[in-house]
Image (tube, rainbow, N blue to C red; front, side):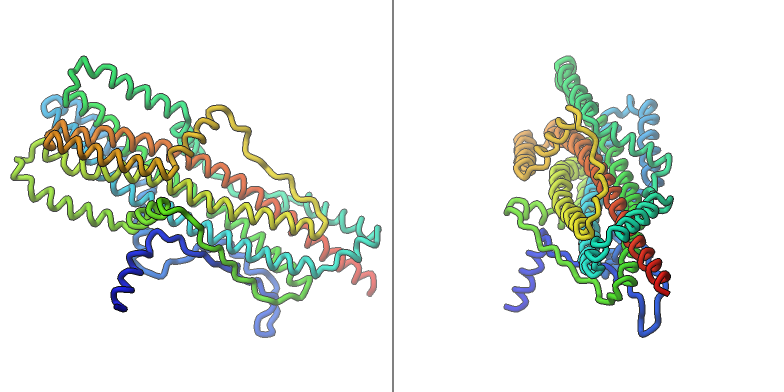
Length: 502
């Protein structure tokens, strides 16, 4: 009975987003009776996972988004295209099926990597939110100890404090900017915005409708289907590699920004502890588990399943079976398509799940960072200081609003369910055709087109979330600098008063 309960607990664990807890490292002013003269402002340190397998998988995922991998895939696509000029006419079906297989397998693997990227980003950002909230609790406690009401009652002292704080705020170090991207990074970000633009999405569908429109000229033949399958396959491989690259690049940039913010935040805590003599540990903050619907829980369950790369293990088993049956089918084009059909159908489902996952998890993260902003405003109110003017995102144009509306539709749980039902319909259709070449193309072409569309939408969603994140980080940094300038001003004023008394 006990073994059965443990087994059921293991089965039910995936998909449940547990509570997340974190605590900011306390900036002690003394340790074991020995004074500490400077803060331990090392910036933000990502938490290392306890299991070696998880650390290894995360390393592989990071490498999948690296520049060498991205350029290797680009070189592979270019080589396939150039060799196709010479060999494509002599082995048309086999040549085009080859890119379909490669695309399906690469996309299948990258699906797992992208899911793990998304899950890791969620855990990391929620942990950041807990540490920020943990330190805010200490800031609030210590700011309340400053007893600023007495200073307000003395107009001269209050005016002097205002002048000193203004001087600090005008100093170069308190007007610092967050790190900037490299010129190559900015170029990649620009390409990302072009790929995720509503105009690119429109051109994509225009191309598809043109292909459908000329279908009758080719008699809707297998060759006609293979041409679109090849084009969408090559596009999808590029988009997957590009998306993995910009995610890793933007994640590294975000980490550099968090390092700058946490250095200022820890310095602020240290200065407050010097002022107040406070030596209490920072509190642990717990973010409760989010409440989700049954359908959403099922989607999260599947995502956790994919994110642990169990799906790739299954793919390896399927590939072994596929190779084993090759001689029975004489390694013909139909045999070549089998592995692409399997990976393509799974990849189509993963495309729906990825967009849903991105939107839902980002929504949870945004909610916690909104709490950080609200608590920051309370800190400024506590010391009667104006909150820095908030930088807002640019006014949304019509294309942006259309993109966001399309994103919301694509991220909805019902859309994921509809996608799954569509896959069932495709399998039923291929079965009715006895899994001939045409039947397998039915399970290759539509999934390839739909998954390519969802990957472009995923770039659109990433761009939108990344832009908001950068604005939030700049606002957060600005608020920390203003609070630090104020605390330094209070310290300077008190030092002046102490000197005058002596």
